[in-house]
Length: 202
Image (cartoon, rainbow, N blue to C red):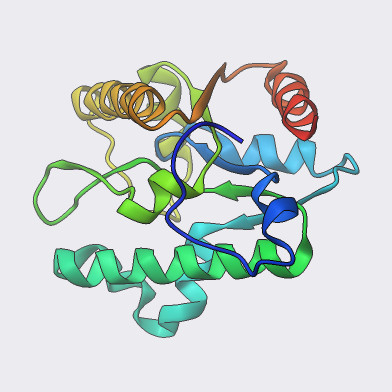
C-alpha cells in the first residue's frame, strides 16, 4: 500500500490483510474508451473484484439517476460518500483487489465548469489510479457516434476536460501518495492495462 494515510478502518482481525489489498480507480474523460478496454480485459481471469461507480449510483438512485448532475453539490457529495462506503464493504466481503470504473473530474452540465469529484474519503481509499488518456479528436468522434448518451461535442471543451483530468490525476498522486499509471488509448491499450493490473497484484 502507498504511504497515504487511510481514513477508514477494517475490523482488527482482518485489517492487516485487507489493508494490503489494492483499490484501483480506472479513470478518464467520458468517451475516452474505458468501456471498450474493460470489455477486453474481462476476457482474462483476474483475481480482483470489478465494479462501476456509476452502476452503484444508479442502483442507489433508481429512476432519479438521470437527474444526478443537476442536484445541489452537497447532495452529490453525500451520494459519493455512500458509493465509497459500498466499495469499502464490497472489498471487505470479497477480500480481493478492487478495480473501480470511475472519474476524477466531470463536466458540470448545470454550471459549464469542470468539477473535481474525489471526496476526502477517496484520497485515503485508493492505492492506484489508472488514467486512460487520448487525443481530443478521437474522443469527439466517439461521442458523436454514441448518440445514446448526452455528452459535450465541443472540441475546445474536450481539450479542457482532458487537461483538467491529467492535472487532477498528477496532483492527487503527488499529494496523497497514490500510484499513477497513464495509458494512451490505442490498439495495445488492453495489454498495457493487464500488465499494470498484474503488477498491482504483486
